[in-house]
Amino acid sequence: MSANAPITPHLLTVPRKDDEVAKTNLVGLMRPALRDVLIEAGAPEKQAKMRASQIWQWIYAKGVRNFDDMTNLAKPFRELLKEHFEIRVPEVVTKQVSEDGTRKYLVRIAGGHEVEIVYIPETDRGTLCVSSQVGCTLTCTFCHTGTQKLVRNLTAAEIIGQVMVARDDLGEWPVLGQSNPPTTRLLSNIVLMGMGEPLYNFDNVRDAMKIAMDPEGISLSRRRITLSTSGVVPAIWRTAEEIGCQLAVSFHATTDEVRDVLVPINKRWNIEALLEALREYPKVSNSERITFEYVMLKGVNDTDEDAHRLVSLIKGIPAKINLIPFNPWPGSDYERSSNNRIRAFADIVHNAGYSSPVRRPRGEDIMAACGQLKSETERARKSRKQIEQEAGLK
Ligand code: SAH
Ligand code: SF4
Image 1 (cartoon, rainbow, N blue to C red):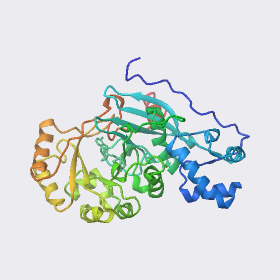
Image 2 (image 1 turned 60 degrees about the vertical axis):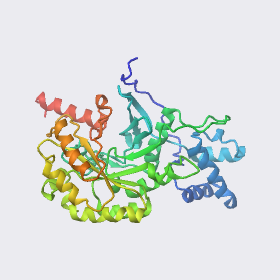
Image 3 (image 1 turned 180 degrees about the vertical axis):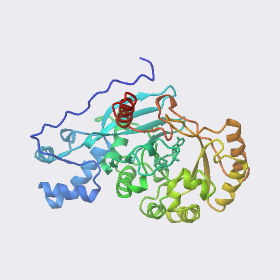
Image 4 (image 1 turned 60 degrees about the horizontal axis):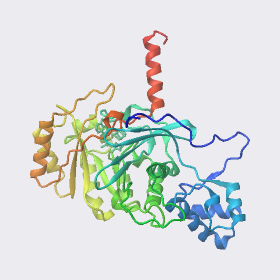
């Protein structure tokens, strides 16, 4: 089979029968909530904290999905758990592997909605690009996701569940009953750069990232988690205080005039307001540099003057500038800047003392690159509509 052939859609979970009572999903519950549901189900209050901790480790450190595998819990307690609860993660519908090793998963969540997750292997790390919403309410003009109407926010379970699904596919859970020597992690970093604006789904994103960071579970350092925002200024303050992860910001323009068009949220919080929050972020969150994402659009935001303006705007902020060559998608109005233009822009930024890596597009052959994500169902819906229009049916 060729490396990039999509794997045939398959169902990983058995559809629930109508007469079955819905069970509470334990995935995505923070420790206190987990303890509370155990007590509600009849677990003795005195033991609930310890039981919650044991279950937590089975789910997040060992990747166990069956209560029967939780061998340090007494059998009657496991029966109680089976009766009331489930351990449910999103269902993988398709998986595609790019020629460059990038993997893209289309997963289905409650309500039949679908989101995409992208895994990007590199020599020194493996990064999972996680989605926070189905679609996005914002309408950045260069972004494919922005053309998809928001269907809903993802729950904390659906966000952390994306990490669990990827670890399943990468075979990155300890093998039960064996001592597993520490190895370099395949999934070592998370970026909240998939579909959606994470700061418009703050509580669920925060809870899911807290779970990812918990030392008794997936245990990723907050320095290995990067949240990308288009600039929801009030929530940037909350991110510093309540999550403390690395921050990336979709900057993309050096004047309000241009940014108002490219990133329309700029009309609500302009460049000056955004920069003020970014200046404080590293101090409040005790984190390192802010990543400024800057998509390179031919003739729109890519002149030498833009580069100089960018440098003077961010003066005093510990920063790295990530230049992203525009990734086209069907129907997009922009063009990617030439390699020479990108190089010249990068040089100006670099000479001003900032690291200015150019993000190499990954997984382009499977539409997994930045800004190309959009769920298949939505695409299918759109094209059906188009077909009908073309056929004169509507
Ligand atoms: N909503 C958040 C996170 C998701 S987008 C945000 O906007 O920051 C992740 C990154 O991909 C953002 O920097 C976004 O501006 C960029 N992006 C979107 N569409 C793109 C495209 N077509 N080509 C290149 N980068 C794109
Ligand atoms: Fe939404 Fe980010 Fe795309 Fe803007 S760039 S439309 S905020 S996903």
